[in-house]
Image 1 (cartoon, rainbow, N blue to C red):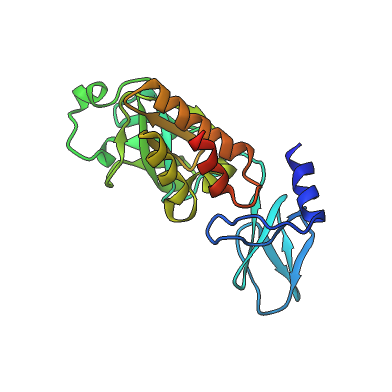
Image 2: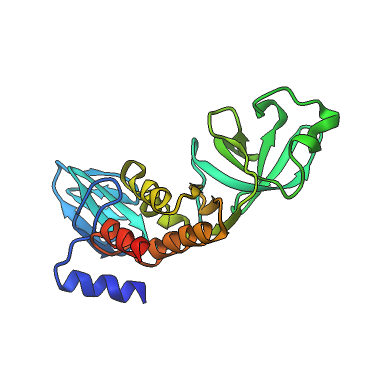
Length: 240
């Protein structure tokens, strides 16, 4: 079990490489557990302050990055946030836009006005049809649901290749610090790898072997996200 492996690492005093900063000490925490004490520390994602203590608000790996304390979730469903870049599939075409499955409790919506160019309402299915896969940005979350936009560089329909699902909580590890991990995979496999923050991964390559190698590298990261020196381990994995 992943949890058991993490606990073994804690007992041995191991360090785990950070997502945003290298080699940060981490420990497994449960909701309500005191992570650290002191007024100089600032609570961030997955934590809260009670008096002099910073407490965990969710189950995961507590990390100290400077004076900022956060908890990186080990498991859990995707929670949309504004400006997240996500991968989704068109499930319906309406008069005003497209309904998109982003693997959330409710579907997202891409308004026709948020497409990168003018789209005639009579030709909407020629721009995006049911079953098409897109990469989009969340620009609004409200009582009606999640609204998407394609009005940024790199967004739009994904042609060819294939998509598969990983746990959204593993996405920071797949991307790496400033995109270093994903860049390593691209360099070693000659594949194009796009990761949505909702946990969908799209891969395309000139050969099926390169595409499969890239997918196996992503799955290796997902399975070994808790390990120290993961970048070196991935590089060794890709060199085999």
